[in-house]
Length: 167
Length: 162
Image 1: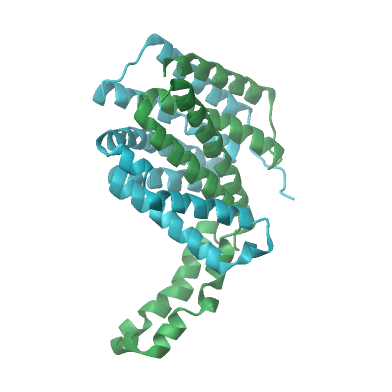
Image 2 (image 1 turned 90 degrees about the horizontal axis):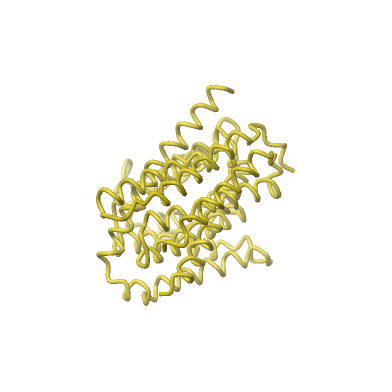
């Protein structure tokens, strides 16, 4: 049980680091991309519409419709391809890795522990943005990030390891 | 774009991002199979059901790919039903909230510094904590409440700089 907990913690922290790097990659991608063409992309809005329709259908008798499920998968694939080809390929790959690691960590520890542990992403992101993108890193920023990190540590420390049985 | 609209968009995206692990956790719990995790279960289904179906002719008789029988068999719903069953309400809700939250955040990156906008998304921990408490019946201790208050204070320090 203890070893499982450690594995979950390591997976969540590594996921946070990768996520932080991916965020800077997305910023670079969105700066290079043609923003007006991103916003006016009809396929993107159609995919978002499908998302919402499938989600709403969960509350109706169509919830097990496989046609809706196929439409849902197609819309996810479209959004991922949109991000890869129109924003940043490397950022999407890093995000997928980060999410897989975070998802794996959920198999070992609670969501309320795993998610705050990924908080190191804020430090990684701020440092890389400061070093590579010449973004400002003021005392107030550092203090704010430190408070967020401290808050994340409190969240982890206070979290119970055992989830009550799901009903 | 006015900075307060960017701030509102980032806060909405943070709440959505904080919601999705709760539903993924639920999906993971509900669809877990004996000896396999949920992702392992998905991979096993694909490997056992779909892999032989699509690679069978390649091994035995490649010409079968051109046959009517192969195509009618390849698109039979029964072969995919177990995979489709895994796409349940928890997974859909988790993906909708996660992907939409992430998309809103990426599109808002144009209007501010990534280090500031990314730090504000730490509000997702609060959404996760509150939902974990109310929906998954996870415990919420006084330390966690203090942690949430610290995160809000940290975000309040950073947010005016957008």
